[in-house]
Image (tube, rainbow, N blue to C red):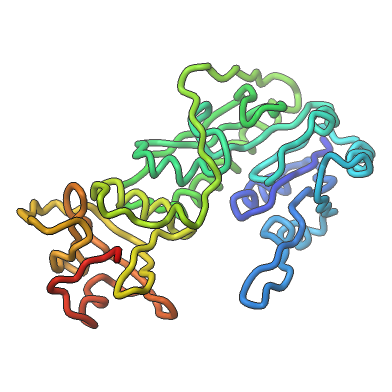
Length: 312
């Protein structure tokens, strides 16, 4: 039975932790980010991994920095055979990487070397990729540069959002870890170095990234809306207020419109049809401030569409 440290923080990392708990091995500690203020009251709230770890009765460690000598001494005292990392939220110093006997492995939500970095799931949708996946990789000092032990792939569907793809990849990552854990520990699984060709980076998302530019094509805006659901959420302006755009599709109808991008063309089914820089976009689900999400058709029933332009 191996002694394993698990490091993770958000929802993405919960299925892999539960996979380890089903294994015959001993999860000796869980590393996760410190509690952060959340909600309207800005009260400190534990992250999803901490909640799952405490429910399972595991030891939880929440250091601000892994570079502190006391933290590293505590990790060494655990005499771990392996550290498994999934969306932990901090880079691991080389001193920490060297602590477990079999090193540290990471579940990264992309097909490395494509989309190294903080936001690979959303960026894969934004880029129009047809598939993505999870890579089980050996960790080293560089950002997602380590050799890859195994991969699992999944198609990116036309109706996938950042949320739906996130949930699917979290489950696939947990299964990938479960399938390869024994071979990792006995040394029979060999890692393959990442190729130099095809390296791309997925930077951390900002709320401002969600602002819709109607000069872009319908396909580009559709990918942005779906990628940024549930966060940071794509937004435009309607009558001076932010309109959250939650779900969309590209219209198959060929409009012969001379209207500028952002002008509402009318309704198509339950969706609001909007002119873009190239083609028309269907806004299927939207939300005004303080209101519940509604269909584009429901929103249209509350206002005059003639001459309506979004984004200003």
